[in-house]
Amino acid sequence: MELSLNTPALLFPAITLLMLAYTNRFLGLSTRVRSLHSLYLQDKNSKSILEQIRNIRTRLHLIRYMQFVGALSFFLCVVCMFCIFRNYMVAAKLIFSTSLVCLLASLAILMWEIQISTHAVELELSDIEELSNDSTLLNYLRGRFDKGSE
Image (cartoon, rainbow, N blue to C red):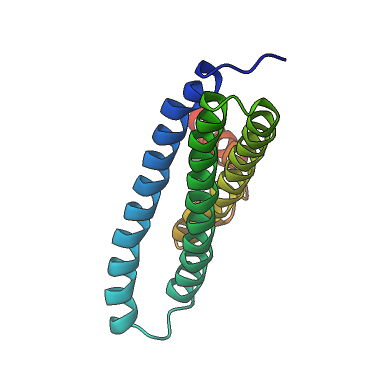
């Protein structure tokens, strides 16, 4: 496989957009932490608030790992381009491969964090009695349509 300067350069926009998305997730969680903190100070015995805080703590750790591995991928792309520029093709291919593995790892952590964030939304909805009886959205929708057809 021929590796040109353009190949790692193709990852630049993808990685930077990914890093922006990670930063937005972090900022959203930061806002949520502040609101949960004030709620916790009002009601320190709320099990729901404590579970949400635990969930957010886990998500913050995952976002930190996502950002670090994504930044490492970006860094390795730059090093790969330098190696191509200096005509160190074996090193460039190895570094580019490592960069792709880092990008894959970052995306895998993102998928894990998305699963956890879905659980966080379910915790928020657990206070609503109508939804807590139906474990899935599909069951909820079936119940709504069955009630409407009567």
